[in-house]
Amino acid sequence: MESMQHTAVVTLVLATCLASSAIAETKKEYRFNVGPKANISVDTQYGAISVKPGSSSQVVVTATLNSDKAEVDTQQRGGRLEIVSHVLSGGDAQTGRIDFEVQVPTDATLNLRSSTGPLSAEGLKGDLSLEGADAVVDIHDVSNGHVHVRTMRGPVTLTDVRNGHVEISSISGDVTLKAVTGPLVQATSGSGKIFYDGDFGLGGDYKLTTHSGDIEAIVPTSTSADFSAHSMLGAVHNDFPLAPRHSRFSFAAGSSFFGTVGKAASDVVLRSFSGKIRLKQH
Image (cartoon, rainbow, N blue to C red; front, side, top):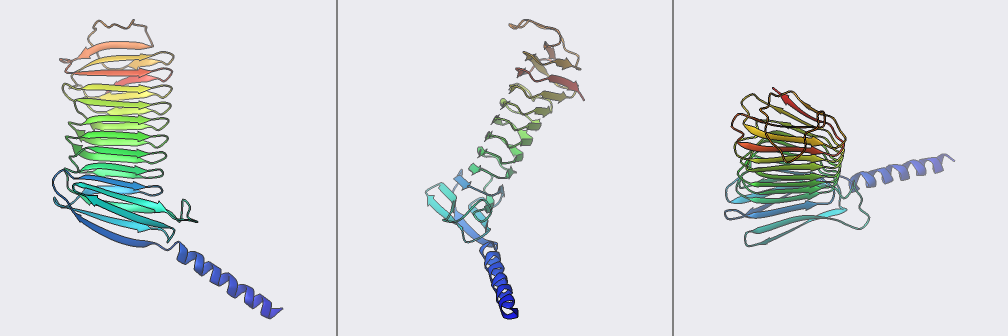
């Protein structure tokens, strides 16, 4: 009996060691020489992607693999670079996870995709496209480019985005915009909340839209904008002094407001079907 117990313990230890080795982390580094305005695509089914500025002529990719159940494929064709993770037979969301840390030239065009995320980009000046289902998206300190974000449930946060052409779409994720300005800023969420904290820039078109989520905008007294807010079924509140103006929409107290601040340099539209809308002053 004692011999059988000893054999069982040894077998269990071996199985545990094999399982541990199967999910042991491995780091791999890849380097690519690129020219100006390189187009870089990073796609991982499970895992995080983090992008930061690096050399002006080189892309450095550090991939962290959770096990031998996933692999990294790379392909470079001229100014286009593709990095893709593949889950191998027997892999799952844990063993098939690959996280990427990427350093790129600041003028690079980026396409990032991950189902689980998180996805983050900072300090860049090129066009950005980020897509994920549950991925948490964080973009900060970027300028002079197009920023496109699509999620299903993942929350999206943009901070200090300057002179951007911004388009955000989420089915149920919350959207947070802090100091985001540009010629075009659009954010849409089905049931998620949209929060804007900033001055709406100068001469831009801003449109924040939800179906059932609330919208809140906090702006300083120095803001110069033309505001139009309406919720079909939700309550609308305005704490900011607005000069009245004409609108093609009929005014209904408690469900809409229209007016201008300063010289009305930017056009701001806030729309919801059943969510609450509130404009607040710093």
